[in-house]
Image (cartoon, rainbow, N blue to C red; front, top):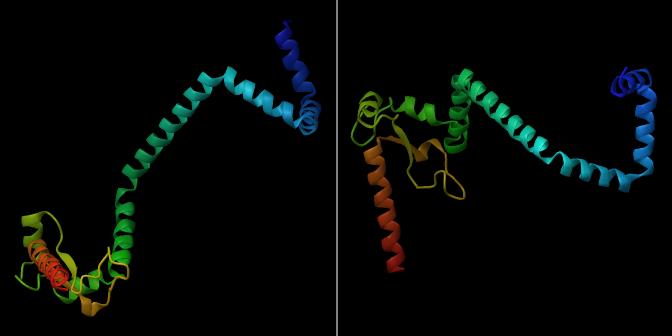
Length: 168
């Protein structure tokens, strides 16, 4: 029987005692414990580094698989969060109220999807939307616009703001 095998058998027989002794030693020698931990880290740096990289790759692979399996569920929650954050949960209510058509040019959502490959948008009339300090998401302040009309309205508001700054 080799020395390694004898040590292993001794450890298996006296495992609880050895664990208890180790705990006591660590409590009595906190500085030495730190030094031993640091020495272990330096001796096994490459193994630790490889293990960290392997663990990170496993985690990334797990997340990738999870996202692939649950894409529809995640997108549903993202849409709900976006709707709540930017429109106070009124987005679909406003879209339904206006029959999913642009208020200015009467473009429907179906035509909008064909032309811009995106759904029709909601516009904050007073300009206090997602980037303002205090967004105004009241139903009277929200209207349905296509992307081109939305851009025109925003340019009008920007021009008015610039001219008022130049005058005042």
